Length: 240
Image (cartoon, rainbow, N blue to C red; front, side):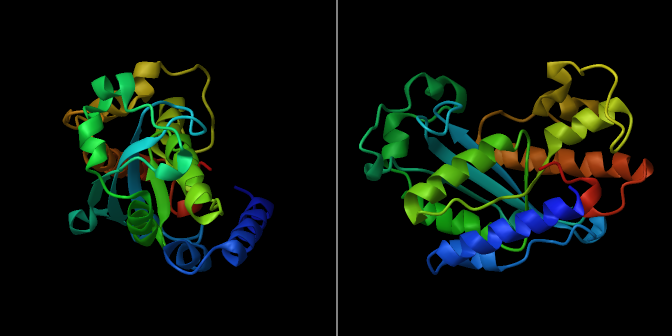
């Protein structure tokens, strides 16, 4: 991200903050995220995973969210959270979890007894305040959380992210910003394939809290390797 990109991102954040209602979203947008010059040992991130009924945030919905803070080189389990989302009546459409239940294991009965979307967003946004979002293929988390915020608050926050999938692509390509000469195998870029490279254990997949923790652990392993290649500050890792 260039200096011009950072200025544009800050301007988008200010515009969104002016439109945001009081509460966790407004606080998030008015609180500056970590500066790009923040040393990696001091960087504050929030690993987030969402489980959904599909990949299109315009028609599919979030069924669960998990998150865990990362402070520098430390995963803060005391700050972790996990919630199942009750269907949002405002959409007027609820086709159930459908075949996605075979992926995340949540049934229609599970989500019917879940937490309301506003409470879920309040918890996630509060945890994310003053941090950078961290996720594996972060477009999913950024897009689905953005759509939820737009629906609930009328404002879509401009969320910056560090993406462990893109970090893995860089690592397999040989550097921080050197790119790569051949496309890595999709299996090598998937969360569990990337973790295997570092000898990290395989957990049960598609449980939001577990996947968020798995992402955080992968991030720490990646940062250790990228430091050997010259990464020192947060801007060296920014992927969106």
